[in-house]
Amino acid sequence: MSTYILMTKNGAIEFIKSQIAAFGSTCIDYLTVILLTEYLGIWYIYSNIVGAGLGAISNFFLGRKWTFKADQGSISKQGFRYALVSIGSLLLNTSGLYVLTEWTQLHYILSKIIVGLVVAVGFNYLLQKHFVFKKPAVK
Image 1: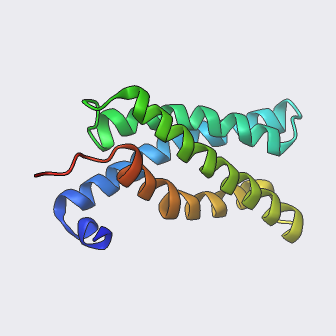
Image 2: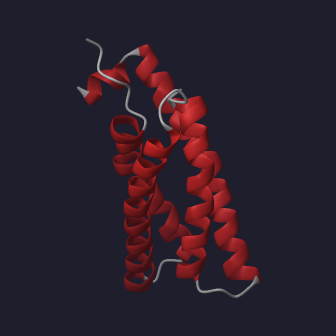
């Protein structure tokens, strides 16, 4: 069913909007990580946690208002579900970042890009669409 949704015009537009919102939030995340790591000397794992938090906050509000147009739903319920997804995303991103950086000696930024792309499409988008900002079933 998910594949079909992406093939419709509305599904494709929603997916593109989600990727634009994710890109903006990712910019906040990455800029935070680079600033904290490169200029303030904070360990990249700690910087990643702060950056992910700031990116998640911006992405939640973009998803609620613009991407999924779900601003009629309960913000507290959506916020709680989004927090659960964000924690999962943070764990996947941070562990993937650590593994790629430490085990393969890739630069942390390249590791972050690779892991971030996989998690964004394969985890975040699907859970935001079907769990966080899900539309009520039509009867």
